[in-house]
Image (cartoon, rainbow, N blue to C red; front, side, top):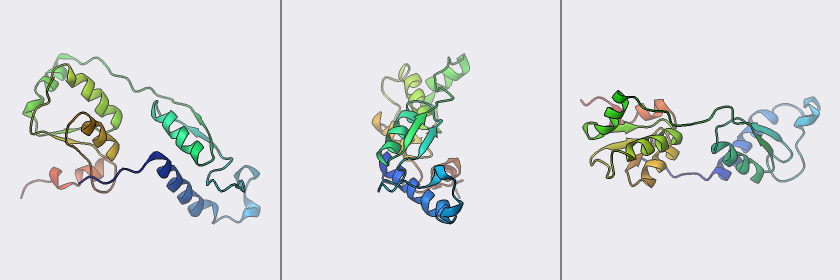
Length: 171
């Protein structure tokens, strides 16, 4: 079910290539604003100034990947991903983790926070649970904790996750 992970720099190069081939090349050069004219360097985003508004630590990682393809990124993390204090009902859900069949985290950040919270109650993870995420990043967080992290074979959102056979009603 899992697909191979693509390194961040490769993702940035692929994104840069798709951006350049989709929009920029459709507009004749004389109509481009001066700031959009491509630097003659071989780097796909050479000279481009890019504002990255992701929470840390992903903002820094994205900026590094964009720098590798010639961009001049600036991080502006507008939100912070932080754990919150769980109430009694929520702590009970973590304590009863072995009563579930599947665990779904919607992002690598959510998976990290779940692992931190659950680690207080589960020194050894319950057996037989399926650990799911909408993408490879989330599945890798589970796998790094020694759990069988899974993600959709294609797609990387909730719809792709819910289309997996594991989330379909049994016939």
